[in-house]
Picture (cartoon, rainbow, N blue to C red):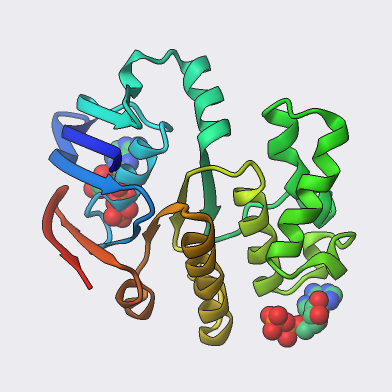
Length: 227
Ligand code: ADP
Ligand code: ADP
């Protein structure tokens, strides 16, 4: 069953007199529960594709369907609510709030999604439990190692129980061993909770462990293979 569908999606940027084609008529189906790596040289359109799928960028042309909804039909406000409910994000640089504890960081998406305050703490604690960080929940990001910070951001991404999580270089700031641990965690979330992951990565080891590897070049898909 397709969970994400792109139909002839193009993204153009005007740069003075010239136009940059960040994405050029991309057709893509992502199936529910897939673990997909998105690879390609710098400037090939990976981040743009991730932003389009996540509803952070509206494409210049084409259609993006998530479930059966054409994202075009959403206002900015509706898109924001939809994103908060259905899509999680994990970044290279963790993007945690440095003034908040791990538990508070993980609680933030629940506040945005207007989850009842009495349910929030249990949900956030459960998510931190799943990533093996319960004993660090009262620490701030600066008191945690890189690997632990990325675990907090995994917990923050899963706390709403989204069906889709988009990752931009999730192991990019981690040493090899820690990167492997984070990938194992992602694989576990994919397997156990049937979360659909799209992972932008330069790390060939990460890409090779995904079920599907999509290669972009000049804004087009030039290879799409399953392991
Ligand atoms: P990647 O993530 O593969 O490095 P990007 O999606 O970031 O690629 O960029 C694809 C192309 O679009 C690049 O040529 C980039 O310079 C251009 N681009 C991306 N975002 C913008 C923007 N906001 N304005 C102008 N050009 C952009
Ligand atoms: P990991 O292998 O999980 O990345 P490290 O070996 O980097 O962990 O860190 C070991 C321990 O030191 C961890 O329990 C972590 O919480 C703690 N630690 C790491 N960096 C800092 C820091 N900047 N301030 C306080 N404690 C830290």
